[in-house]
Image (cartoon, rainbow, N blue to C red):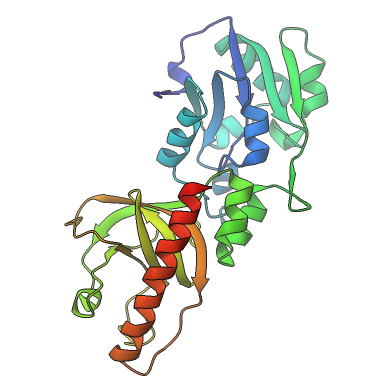
Length: 296
């Protein structure tokens, strides 16, 4: 499905929008409860902490482009983006309601999570929204999965720990990472397992070092995240995807990796022969895991 993405200043006033409000990093299951029933999602860019307290700004779970694609898949018709800066941060909660939700968007229905706060000093909350007669307010309760509340903070922690399966349960779909395919040191090709290599962004969450089953541009793949300790290349972290049963030239293209399951940690081997034997096992394990995921 397509989605219309517009910055707030360019939005055409409309008196019938059903608006979900939040940052929605990751578009996890709690966010989806807020978004359900909305035709418009109102969000911010960059993350408010990146402006107000840069040292505390979290790594994002997904890029703006991935967020757009996931929201489109949920049936959202319009993504309105507020360029968040210090001037906007001074808007009071009442001014946010009047100037953004009522005057600019013409909201008839507003949905937020029960812990949503807004306005200068975080003075606004769901109770304040519900007191306004101009629109109906829906307050979505927090969502629990595996006995814990789903939050972007929890998802980031799971991803960093390599527990992409648990992260996926919270997200409602695989954790994804994308980037341009760049040349590596050709070590994988020499070993018989050519890989498409992506340098992970410092601004985005990345799974902990290890080997994973994943889909790379929708092809089953065995993916190594780490620094390749067997060869001590001195390069930084790479996400190396071996696309199973494929021989594609992907240099310069965008690769989107959807992580399914962590297979093992990253280890140092005695040499190329031992590593090749392990890689063969990893590929078969990844093949099995991807097939199970596709059939589930």
